Amino acid sequence: MKRLENKNVVITGAGAGVGRAASLLFAREGAAVACVEQHGEMGAQTVAMIHALGGAAKFVQADLTDPDSIAQMAQTCMQWRGSIHVLFNNASAAESARFEDVSLEMWQRQMALNLTAPFLCSQHLLPALKSAGQASIVHHGSIDGVLGNPTLIAYSAAKGGLQSLTHVMGHCLAPYGIRVNCINTGALRDSTQGIPLTVMQQSRPMSAVQRAATPMARPAFVEEAAAAALFLASDESSYVNGSVITVDGGRSVVTPGTF
Image (cartoon, rainbow, N blue to C red; front, side, top):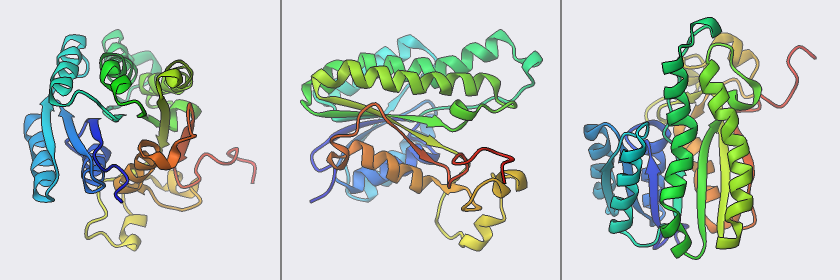
């Protein structure tokens, strides 16, 4: 039996990276997937890839920094399927700047996409999640939200807020049969396809300093992050609620400078 057989799923940021990898993986596991993406061509490509696998998918275009666009996205998804079993709040973006150079506009953009959007998507889709009887919300966080990244000030703050949001949503929504969890990722590599592990270990996006601080000495493939999200989306994690799973190759398991 496929792990998401006959389940309806909404994935934000489905046009690339972990969002696309999760869309394809969830579809292979039997889900019908609403692929939410701001960039039309990228979202349509993901849907076409799912259709090529024989799966069911719908493209929903939305700007997740705009509350009105989020509300419209939710209405479109609930018209598509009355019950939503899984919401993967995956969409995110990071902007780099020194603390003194972080403008209010940058701060607000980072908060809107990385923290407010997961809150609003969950809230607007709540009727369909309740209707499912048993549902799962998965947030895509970051180890920067726990450790802090001095080059990503606003992003770190927003992802930090996502940790607390996961905990309180897990408490508030459990009476409706809705579990809420989060995956915290570190450095990510776009795809496993055609990339030997030895090449990946030597390549970006992981710096030499990051690699030295990571016991597994490599970034994660987006498919590995998608697999963690699938576990939290599926009934295999039926008693996991309000939790954060770290997917960073061990980078955050020890205090730096103690060995």
